[in-house]
Amino acid sequence: MLKKLILMLAVVLFATSAFAAKDKNSVQVKGSDTMVNLGQAWAEKYMEKNAGDFIAVTGGGSGTGLSSLISGTCDIAMSSRNIKEKEVTLAKQKGIDPNEIKVALDGLAVVVNPANPVSKLTLVQLADIFTGRVTNWKELGGKDEKIVVLSREVNSGTHVYFKEHVLRKNDPNSKEEFVSSALMLSSSQAIADEVAGNSSAIGYYGMGYISNKQKPVSIAKDEKSEYEAPSIENVINDKYPISRPLFLYTNGAPEGLVKKFVDFTLSKEGQDTVLAIDFVPINK
Amino acid sequence: MKKIKELLIEKLILICGLASIFFVLLIFLFLLKEGLAVFKTVSSFNFLFGKSWYPISEPPALGILPLIMGSLLVTLGAAIISIPIGVGCAIYIAEIAPLKIKEILKAGIELLAAIPSVVLGFIGMVTLVPLVKTVFHLPTGLTALSGAIMLAFMAMPTIVSIAEDALYSVPKTYKEGALALGATHWQAIWRVMLPAASSGIVAAVMLGIGRVIGETMAVMMITGNAAVMPNSILVPVRTLTATIAAEMGEAVVGAEHYFALFAVGIVLFVISFAINVTADLFLHKRQ
Image (cartoon, rainbow over all chains, first blue to last red; front, side, top):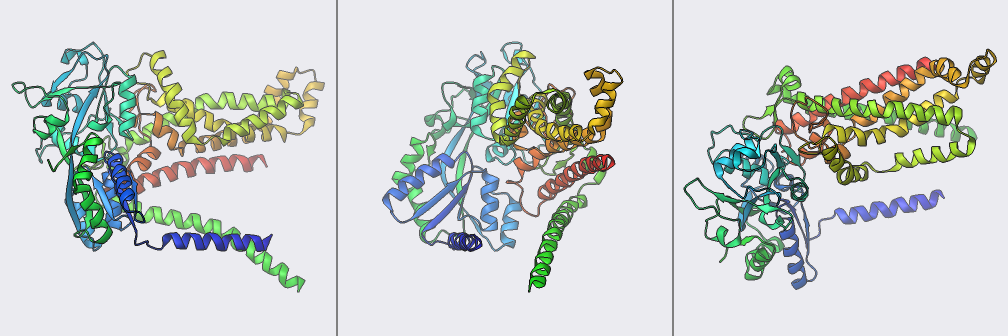
């Protein structure tokens, strides 16, 4: 019995140490939940063509990906926001040099329940809703219902982008915050589900998550501009006001397998995948 | 030879015994080391009694009062639901149920304890949350009440099994004496058995509550996580545990946010430590 146990322990130890040894043929990609489907599609296509190379893609949020890159536990971080200055300083302290590569564009869709009569909003109205200045749909031409504001958790790049570009209107000195009664949900899918089932909810997420159970709202920069729907053409033509770049971050200029994978994402095939997952390619 | 073997085993067991204390101590020291650093940037008063939690803003607002209130509200709700049901169930199992039903009930309760909390959370999300929304005509069903109901299920196994033990260990002569003096079965339970087992039952309740306040996954899924001061049990709340779980991934190691989350961990540790000590005091009183 004891012998068996020791043998088992030895096997486990051996297996884990073999696992921990860094495999030259594998790349760890981690970060943005918005990009995780895209990352996985890239990895699949890439591995089809390059048998023997192994790309592992996991989500967790842009902040999670970047802090993994800084602590050296992943090779490529996916991020739906720019790296913060604080993170760069911290990375430099640890001998990591974050290198930014823009790989795609994403339109942020603002969605409501299909039963909600409100179908277009201006950026100012959006800011008013998400900061809690407007609390009833009645004030926006809807039913007399309390607005249920849905947001992503703070580890989400989408959360940060929406706060900086919609709530704070790109003003770095602005102190606007999400209303404290906003529900913080842990994934884009959770927001999609809550909006589908709640007639007074409003939420936001990457265009790729829109389905016929939610209604995307058309957005205008101000009252005089046209209201634009979140569609691929509108993002490419820069008509849709809330779109953002998506990034990969590597440590220094990419080399070896990391470079091979990054080059693949920027290739025609990689950019076709971007389009297939409902994001917007950068290389037109 | 035999003596050496005995001695060796004795020492080995001693090391095992000390190890558990040693690890707890290490964990506590680590918590303190990482958590206390936050008080360089925010005073302990503003941390504990500040009403806004915006950890990633510049400068961050690190007030955890809404989180403490959220945790306490969900726990209180769960206690109100689970204590009467749990103690009632324990009385039934210990005093009234025939042997066969007793066995089935005990197995069932153990099964309840075996359900992973993420599964309970998921079930709550698709069944309880819409129900709470329609029953109370709320804008959303992701509320403290939903969390409290789901957590009551988690506290129940602990409460039932320990309270049942306490009732069972009351000497049979107490009950027989009461019955011999002409008390009805209910009078014997209510006036004699329950007071005799009271310290054990209090301990059971405290341990159940300890389990609830540390629970993370289920509350994160069904309480809505809005860091707002709750004014009723029908609003969304954000608990201490859910905050740590949701934000730890984002926090850059060595930044204020990271230290603040460890400080939240200290607060949580202090609360559950206090609950466990209270439970322990009552358990020892019984013995």
